[in-house]
Image (cartoon, rainbow, N blue to C red; front, side, top):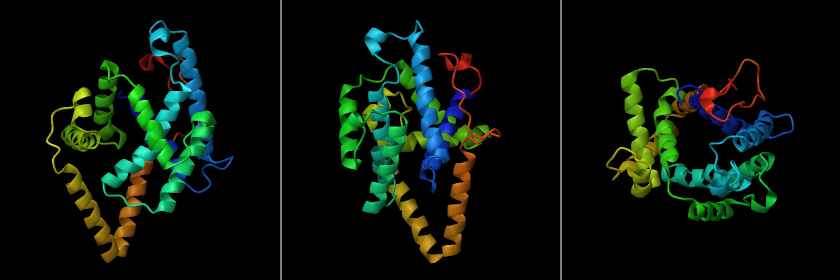
Length: 258
């Protein structure tokens, strides 16, 4: 997770950033290209796992299937909106509809069949709940991945100080546990945390910053610029531009750099 995993997270951040930039999903836009790139990566992963003895096709079916991609899309779109609002974000109906439309088109480019491609926010939430009912309880691999993602968060934003990294990871555990609930946090073997009041306090902080932004517009503009710069720093930008390289091994630690 330290090397390949952090890079994958930064690539995901770059994709989400680019599809929402003006012109990002135009034919020559980087959001368009990165969405198609994800489709190619998924196809290569399916090919590699099809040749791997470690993948139990009878038990697990097709790896990175269209159904799982469609389910993931509902999480990145409607569920992301839902959790963002729980954290204090505000969106107009038009903004929410636009957010979903962008993800729908990106999902189409990623190869999700139109028959299972989300239509809007309500439809995406239904798809997510259906997928949740079909999924088995988190296994060991899910536990390892979830905890690795939390602990990789400080590395993604370039935090190198060990004490600050531990503090940030602990904070992410707190907020994540409050969002996903005690049962899921327990299934993923998160460290036990008291989640009472975590979300209200987070929302209070967001409201305070929003109020300060209204009272001090220049400060708000500076904060927005800083947030955007931070997002760029947590995204993968390579000197060669967008690379269409794909993994060449089923196991990430054995694969060439891509």
